[in-house]
Length: 483
Image (cartoon, rainbow, N blue to C red; front, side, top):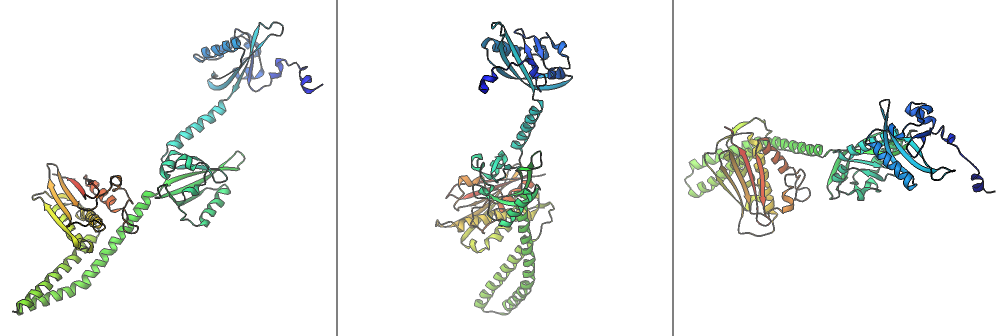
């Protein structure tokens, strides 16, 4: 006799479910409880006798009760098994259940149908699912890029912030090693130490430089924590990134500030070392001018004197521009600041072939500003205009930069215009972003206009740009008139 044939000889009674973990019931075609197991008595806190002939659906609350009755009747009608989620409250505790209805017929009279009901408590599983959903919602909406990698180092999860920060799509990243966006600027030992740390179940923290899909650097502080199973075995790795772009930007700005301070110190030394000989030369020139009657000599000495005066002014402007700001608001003549900025820029070598024009409206009120900060803004804009024109291949009759000031009822308006190459439409929106530059590598930090934007905003002003390619660029600065 085969095992299958032997199995047909087995007859099971309801007793087989007595110690079953789930609640088991035999129900009449009217939904009355004909039998139940020990687990049902334990959960419902009623004896088997108390449950006998009671209405099964009274265990549940409306509107779920009506839904269960509909499913019950459908099972009997179609002789099919149905699976349905359900909830019940016992002793103030809400339970989540997985309810299975299975119809069967009476052996003696097949027209009489019964139904076997199994109610399995899935509250703990439901809680885990809810916790996972909460974690997923938090992970997907946090501003910090998150990633999970398996033991082979392949990414199995990245959140939306990671996608946005890296520029890659999820399809580009999942199943790939994080080295896909690596900058290759860290030595192999750096990553070896990281893997040795996390493989032993320890947390690793370090600063990393990655590369976005567009090739730009992405600086983060990366924390990698091993994910452990119930036995303490490492099963995956969880990584969270903290954006360090602002920190790096401030570090570069600090370096730039320190360089400016160094220039100021150097300029002060130059002024001292060069100033005394210049003063002597100027004095001797004036003595000779007073004692000579030769017109040719007087003309040439006059030229020498004017050049000595020009050198002295350049050194003085350099010292004034590089001197650290005291950050104190003072009533400032905006026209005078414009003129000084133009004078500083026009002495540069690149500016020799550029014509500077100023159109300054009179009787503009003095504004409460930090003069050297505003001058820094004007110089940054003018230097960018000079660089743009000097690198422009097109030959024009004349290269021109103009500075104009005007006044409305509530604002002072300053315009800086050039007839250089202009800025493409796609780059206009980026010019005030930190580290954005169209200059060649090493020619610019990309911080000048970003710093300028911040300075103008700190005075409750605004700075805008209007440009067309091959037609030049205009920067418009508005500063409020404070009475």
